[in-house]
Image 1 (spheres, helix red, strand yellow):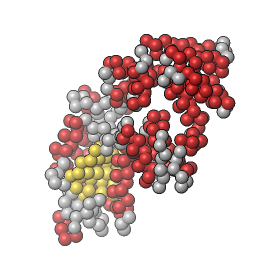
Image 2 (cartoon, helix red, strand yellow):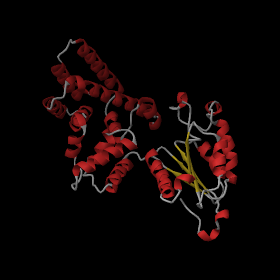
Image 3 (cartoon, one colour):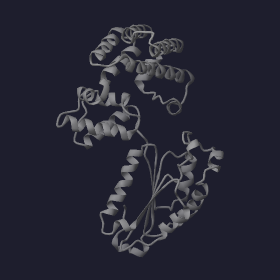
Image 4 (cartoon, rainbow, N blue to C red):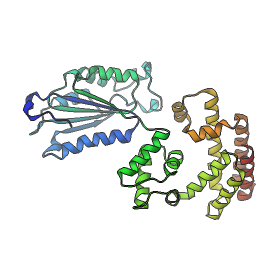
Length: 351
């Protein structure tokens, strides 16, 4: 928290507002925690902290909290989570748009937002207010910023890293824990790791601990992740890139390690589905963020490059063949290992 100089006087210390917004929820949470930890490290700090989360938010209660004098301290900290970005569950997957008036009108927090926005210009002295928000439309940001007290507000964007920026972010998180990612590790995590930054950060923490004082290697990644996932990545990449010999080699290694064809088939099906979604998105010029929301497919650089070499018609035929194999497999009408091996070879040769 930014405390005013002691000479300014406790009674006139101006209120301050911090607006943290963006889809990098991990960094936002860390920024909020830094405010809390500094306050709680002081005597009686817990008595000067108020925190609330949408949708359980009342503008009246917020204003009363902001106007309450700090107890035996010079500042009071109010943290409000997602007052302006929260949406009812039915519309939670929709992207906020500036003209999304119908959804906003039906939002049960609408009146609370309006009342609290009207209060912001007169934020009480000796109060530090942190507005922690997820995605906000440009119109929402402009409306909030327009009400913040001038010269006493700090607006910070927390945008989740993507593409090569995500690899640099992963390497940075490893360094924060005293570790180093060897070449190739960040790329594998970016392409095949969990979707959320929080889960990726947990993977980095486990890898750094596992590697000890040595750089985290691709071998470490393969040993730590369940289900021989690195070899699965090799198999899927070989299929997508038309390298049939490499695809068959990876497939046979997985079988020797105890992987079952019944477990591998859904991953091959998911690969072809991702390639098809990506190919159609490229053909239609679709927004990558919208594709990820609608289909759960991240249009990373490697997937784009793989999809560009494959006509949509060929991918559709490949997906039909895989789904037919999956149906026969569940009915016991095909040998799992030999049937999938034959299909892997055909896919890598034709996809």
